[in-house]
Image (cartoon, rainbow, N blue to C red; front, side, top):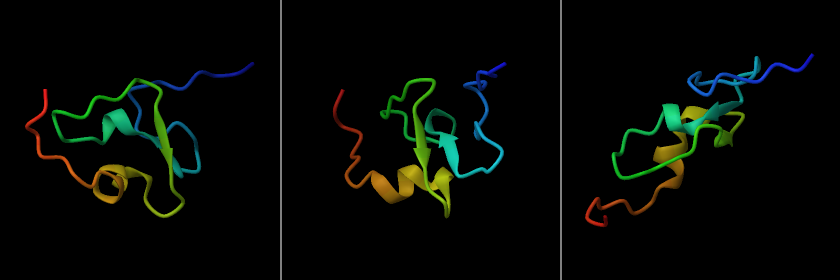
Length: 60
């Protein structure tokens, strides 16, 4: 039987190469869905640091 990962977990798999980025984003103006994931074999929790280039926080 397939197990659906908990969207509140950081890592949905045992290899820890993917993470649900909703749980690691710290900027209040970045909105991410429950099951949106980012895969990086080095550090998947570094999505925001490695991929968000311009986040001024002035747009609403």
